[in-house]
Image (cartoon, rainbow, N blue to C red; front, side, top):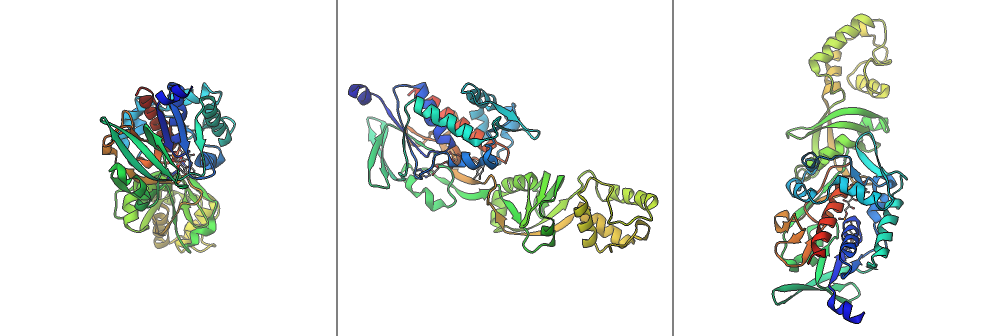
Length: 417
Ligand SMILES: Cc1cc2nc3c(=O)[nH]c(=O)nc-3n(C[C@H](O)[C@H](O)[C@H](O)COP(=O)(O)OP(=O)(O)OC[C@H]3O[C@@H](n4cnc5c(N)ncnc54)[C@H](O)[C@@H]3O)c2cc1C
């Protein structure tokens, strides 16, 4: 047994999140001679999996076209496209199904375990780790790395927070995203460059804006544009007590992550609450309503698909009096109302990442990683998986799919070393 251990290679995975776990358990399964160890700095494993998708874990997205799927990654589109050829959404579904975890698809394409509980995913990953004897060291933060070059091969000395040093032949960095560049310092020895980290998938703050009185009100489809840029997104929009949220805003925050960071998250937006209409078509509709409903109050039940509270709010914001009837609506008020329905202007001052599917844009530069193996192009036997790389997806299960894909691709390559 001692001999076998001496001859086998040791793989150390830094980080006990989705990508690190998926890499470790698959590598251990594919190559039984590997000694696999996960090092996790906290006292929790898979903590983001647990809280993800509101505790249900949005495992992946029901998209089975690689090109279409790759378009959901504001950073790393071409990189993930290559990797998806090895392990894609259908592979994720099959992988979990083979381990008795069935996934279901919701109307918007998001996929969750049928149990509606992220614990199902956690249990499955932990069971695999046990089955393939993956060793897990918790409460151990990696503080620094040392590269050891011998006969054109590189191995690693890893220093932990308790000054313990452990050695490995193969090293996988799965430490997730860090909010500040300085937090990548312990990786410096690897000579890799970092794309500046910046938040993605956040909601917009509209401090003291009267619209926050409508918190909880949502529209099924709206277009949100960022003034002075080409950034715009369409989708469900939710009014919160601090501002705006929902897929349209989250997607916009992802595509605009860098541009919005450069404004220190102070920018102007325009909202079209009724994307099926523009100024002209809405004017025609209003003309019709004035004829058909002349004696009725403008503020009372609207003829469109908008929540009544929102309709009333926009009407009042446009200067329309509660008692005003359609027949008495002045052209000035009508124009203002139409403009606010199609082009509602607001100032965003700040962002909120609390409780959302928050990710970090930025990380290890992709030009320095081989997308077909996740191996570093700079250091032999060094791999990167998951959010530590400069890859991030929009909301909807795309970030976990990247974690599964990169974890599996690295595991597969490592198992053949
Ligand atoms: C609230 C929330 C909800 C989300 N919901 C979803 C969702 O439903 N669907 C989806 O696709 N994505 C979701 N995401 C995004 C998704 O969780 C991440 O993209 C994914 O977890 C990244 O996996 P990872 O393994 O790369 O990193 P992480 O999950 O961040 O894991 C990294 C691990 O490394 C450890 N670590 C860091 N540094 C060190 C060190 N020096 N030494 C030792 N250990 C270290 C950390 O403690 C952590 O446990 C959500 C994110 C958040 C915050």
